Length: 254
Length: 254
DNA sequence: CTCATTGTTCCGCTATATAGAATGCACATT
DNA sequence: AATGTGCATTCTATATAGCGGAACAATGAG
Image 1: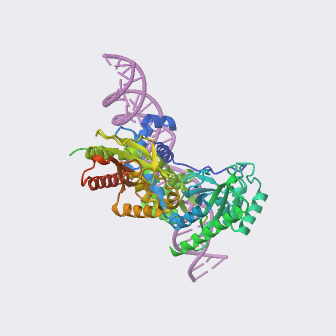
Image 2: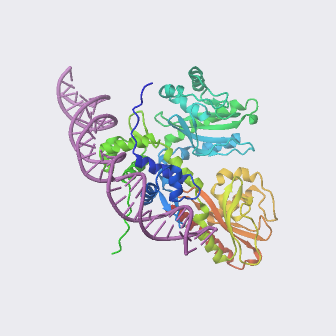
Image 3: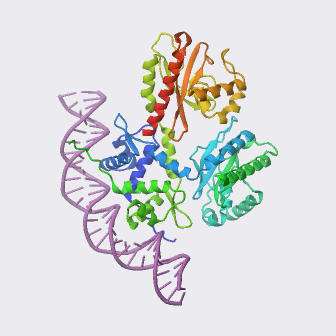
């Protein structure tokens, strides 16, 4: 096996970010001792890093002497998304899809070999397909992901094909099937996931393009299979495709 | 002169976060040299920190060899907001409202087409308007709910309008009246419930916003109509509105 | 009043992050 | 081709920044 060059990481930075992540994921802050135990750091080390994070505004001391994450991390992260102001550009079409299908609508972008949901509208039907905003999924098994994969397939193929983990019994697990599926997606203009990530949850996705042809993201509809009647599949696919191309046109005007 | 405890900061951590912030604020990534120049760091230092950030998933190399922020920072920030303790941020203002009005004060968030009370302060007056913490109410007939409804009206209108159940003889039951009421709420800056959920129990509500304008929740005052004298309505409405905007500002500083 | 636990400070040592120079790459310009 | 420019990346010797551990303070419980 080829030896990876093994990236050199600054321990201070990674510990600091680990603390930040930990604090961000907790409802109410934590004390120094707890934190250090959970992260396997010494108390004094943890304390010092917390001081730094506090000075930088990422962490605040609660009146009860606990440490808690501030909204600064959120503001930083927000500016990342803002710089792709996709949400604004896509919101009307998400709404339209929601009204037309009454199912759960997602807006997603690619992040390496995953997709991340940056917006969604809940299904109004009792059975929901649940996925949080900010959640992630592998690019090769959900509708939005497959749409994005097809866009950059030459770039991504080898890396994706080398790592096809199964999530359900329908997940694509061999490169040949992947090739075929991507080709079908390109031909049809939108992607179909037949329950390849979550059992019995189907999804449809289509890509959104920037004016220069680059791929900006994808939107999709997620549907529990029992909600899907005869012919619904084609209808939803067409809706998704139309919505995505409309958003792409909107981006031109921005 | 008073000696400030002079916060001790870990330089590695602060430099790393500075890089992250910088990258997050740029539309398309940057090269090592540019970054180091803008931040006043050496190239090799910048390079090393970028390696670390990449290994931790906060930064990615674009195919054109530039470095760009991933959405990880955003995901971290997102979880801050999700775990954000609105109760803590709002508690002082709830108390203030309680002292000013002596009536029952509520803090609520939206959950689909209902609102859920996540905190309250009991009225000190003998006649109470009763609702438990954790209890729910339809979004279109109480003060806090109507404030939240007005925020996301485009998204919610059709669904809400399709299901207007009457609870009292004042409950809004047709879509036209709902439109009008929401418009009035928006104009006035706070919502009024004239006993539309419980007979003779009026309420007032105003929305709380995150720094980017997203709606975080709402707070409100509930008043039995016999407690309400001439002019009290305007006074309480103004108080509620002011309290909500103060909490919103608090969130900014968090 | 202990005793137990947490937050904070101090300090000497060494692993760590650093600066700066050297190397390697890609592409213009001649 | 040959040369030059600007970039990313690697190397290395050195100073110091960050580290662990233990001491100290401040709580709070029993």
